[in-house]
Length: 611
Image 1 (cartoon, helix red, strand yellow):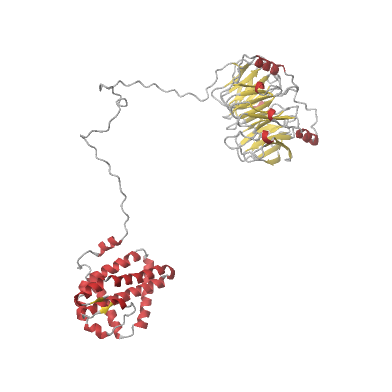
Image 2 (tube, rainbow, N blue to C red):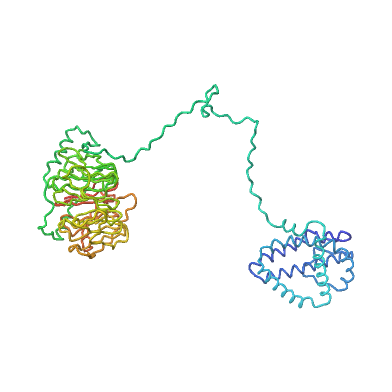
């Protein structure tokens, strides 16, 4: 591209190819600054200074009306004679005011976006290194006096640009900086439509506006208050008839069923003089217990919270208390499973405790969260109400006397009630405020029946019924070894010399309670997974009535099983059921004299292992 004449200044400043090459070289240097660091930035500064000298040189030559070939011009061709600059100095000064505005715009358009992102510290380092490089370059390349003149001219031009910045016509420097900055487009906000006062609105249904077709408004309908029904309403007080929910109560089969439960013989489950069986023979008897499809059946509608085995030696009768308040009875000796199951509804909330009466096996006592304790009498086909307290919720109970005439009841709020069945009415005889905030289980010592043990949230307390204070009773012994929530605590069934506890810290603990004094030592800690989660009933380790040195507990392991541990911590036996046992049996119990194990899961099924 050849330029000359009066158009030299315009093309020298706005020539596309020339400034494109300059911008290309600067872009390459700026891109490599990330790798070379401050040295590369110093080179870029030197090149920018050389480019400004190069511009001054072009303008000086243009003022002398000299023709240049810019296509063959190279950026390193900066050296020229002093005479050439002296000859053209007058012309350069004449056009200095015209070219300074264009140079300033072009340089700031290229330099400002790159330089604004750097910090003040980086700028000071960059200027220092750039001046050092520039000084060294001047020593090496600009040794002649003509070079000094060129630099002086460039300095004068830059000073003139700075001095005349305010008087330059066009846009100001602040305005250029604002135009250079990258601005994000403002978020578009949806304009709300203006409401038309006189315009016609959308059509609405006259029925929704409560207006009849003639335009007359209808009278307001009176709103009736909505009654929120209780999910678990309390059943009426007094005795309830045994009316099965799963079949007709007038059937002859149900009458024979009740007669069977009323006439079953009872064999005592307590024989303290009998010695414990050898552990080898005990294991052999456990190995002979099996499960099949005929010994698995759904008895209740909800999760099972309690299980009891009738002490009969002839028939196998199982009772289960459910979360829904149902009590299911299952006679396994019946030919068909459907014909041997009867379900009743004596409670409205979970049945947490269920026992057959030790004095009369035709009675079954059930306790529920709804604050009621009932006795099912099969001979009269009714559920008699023994104790009722609608202001409290019951958690567990046990028999204080061997004749089952007196009971001790634990409340969820930490209270303890003493109930005598021989008196009239359904109230307590004595109400004691214990030192526990909550009570989960209550169990009476089998030999020294004045002692009973309670399981609270974190502590185990042993009380003496002879020293109970209605206001605040202090325990004889406190077991504080547990670190998490406790599920249960039971004495051993024959002698009461051992206590087994189930805790949420995945441990079963066995204590020596042979001498109830100020302290009860810890004998064994058994590591066992007791984390059942939200939808499964919590595990409760119980003793085998026939072998009081062995405890029975459910398991979360796969395949599903029920495990038996010795008091020393060794595993005695595991009951596997294959396809017949595919769920977790949280609540388990053993027959007092026979080798029969019944376990209940959280769906209402009963699994029975027997010889």
